[in-house]
Amino acid sequence: VIGSGAGGAPVAWSLAKAGKRVAIVDKATFPRDKCCGDGLTTLALRELAPLGLAPAQVPNWQDVHEVWLRSPSGREVRLEMPGGKGVAFAATTPRRELDMALLDMAKAAGAVVIEGHAITGVAQHHDHVEVTIEHHAPLAGRHLIAADGMWSPVRKALGLHQEGYLGEWHAFRQYASNVTGTAAERLYVWFEPDLLPGYAWSFPLPDGRANIGFGVTRDGRYSGADMKHLWAGLVDRPHIREALGPDATLDDRHTAWPIPAGIDRAVLSADRTLFVGDAVRATDVMTGEGIGQAVLTGRLAAEAITAGADDSPAAVRRHYERAVRHHLLADHRMSKVLNGWLAKPLLARGAIRLVGLSGWTRRNFVRWMFEDEARAVVFTPRRWHRRFLRQPGTYR
Image (cartoon, rainbow, N blue to C red; front, side):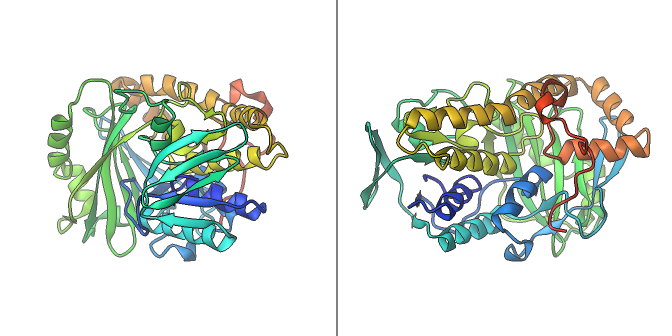
């Protein structure tokens, strides 16, 4: 397994638990920071819970019980998470801590972890795949899981890298401390007119801290310099400053990262190699959320390998690609359509007004926004069930 983040560590855990001999290789030394919004949707929680990950393993885990949306017109809508306190439908946690906890679990399950070493080459053979590693002996195995991010060294080594690809989104993030306003407890999503179909966010963390940032689509409107200029004035917009409180300060430096959200055009596998997470562009094209998708694609890769077809890479690839398309492709296409609608301020304003019409619309929209149910459920009847909008939360 190349990469030990939210895709790599869980797949290594799953394979080790299934009795496979597993090695994880990562060029970083953990714990390490990763530029991320730090939000966990219900999809992420439902994928993490079966691994045995407990919130207590992550020091700054914080459940989220309500979400506040702000329309381009300034209208605010409060969405309360179902179930109340004691039932998690969303949470926040710094990626430094979450990824460390997942890697510790993979180690405990029996995976061998090789940190601080980059891979230098990949060679696929008829009965195995071999990886050469900087300052380390090479490794060989029946299968290779590439959980190595958007720039995937594995993809590049196999000659599958797409020159010039920079992702579908670009995001900026910085931590804030001394947050004394409502953002200390509320999760905010601000649909700013100049960011649509992107948005700004503030996700609460313990001890008066917050993860604040914004994401915009790569549609040619903004250069890197433009995005830096946007970031410089974002926290001084009156409603954002009010939410953070007058004493809030930005810590360290801001970080920026590209978000790949093009799973409909990605190469999912190559011979004995399966790509997961950002390496397969599995991020939600409408929200930019990728943790749940990383863990999900990792689980699907592990299931494909343990399905009894170890000696048949073609069978493993078919199993994996069929599962990924079933779980993600229709939703991805629907989200692209919705993203086009949200790009128009009038439609974005109308959507948020519709969401706030009644208790029923607020309750069901927040589940639709954070749940692992299909956005394109009307096009995927095999996923229908009677408890579509009544599934219990996680970590009860």
